[in-house]
Amino acid sequence: MTTTKRRGIFPLHALAAATALGCATQASAVSFNIGEIEGQFDSSLSVGASWSMRSADKDYIGTRNGGHASSQTSDDGRLNFKKGETFSKIFKGIHDLELKYGDTGAFFRGKYWYDFELKDEHRLLYDIDDHNRKEGAKSSGAQLLDAFLYHNYSIGDLPGSVRVGKQVVSWGESTFIQNSINSINPMDVAAFRRPGAEIKEGLIPVNMLYLSQGISDALTVEGLSHIHI
Image 1 (cartoon, rainbow, N blue to C red):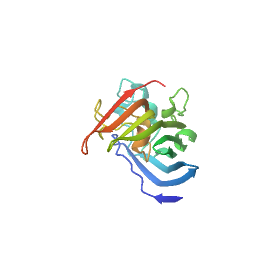
Image 2: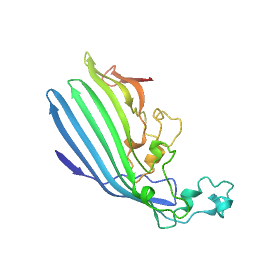
Image 3: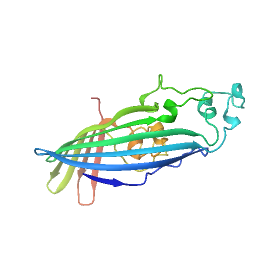
Image 4: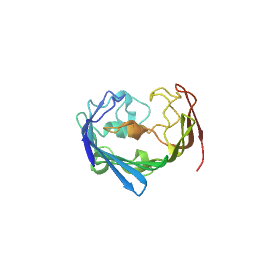
């Protein structure tokens, strides 16, 4: 078993009123064999926190709560936390399991998280709870992400690969331009806003058939189709 420590990578949020700090991140990988099956289990654990850097702006607060806006839909999140207070103290983990037999294999990825600030602390304006929330938006939870089978092959000297199941296909690197070529997989915005977020946590895998085939030494063709399983 090998263990490596690395600094977490934390995105700059669009909200200037918040800042996030990852306190600790640890990654580890374990390789193993079950007969002729090769396996690898990767883990990444992190602890982080986010602070409010300024008081709520009354232009975004509903009139019922002393502000100037016509709606108070998001006032709970703005008025529950004062300047300098933490609005997230989170522990989370993400784990990958790959099993391989020859050129065929299976890949699984799952994650879990627990936000102590939102789950356990009392709020002055309104206590936040997870009732009727989608799983990914809850203050604590667990989700299965990727779950697919793959097979690598060659046609002559040209390599190819096929995958089927829940997976992420990244075409391009953009995460901010809507409807771009990298919008095949929807984004989990709640995951991206958590301290210490990684790109693999924030892209939601979908069921699809994916094919990659080399047609020359310098050219590869890729294609995919969304499927129902």
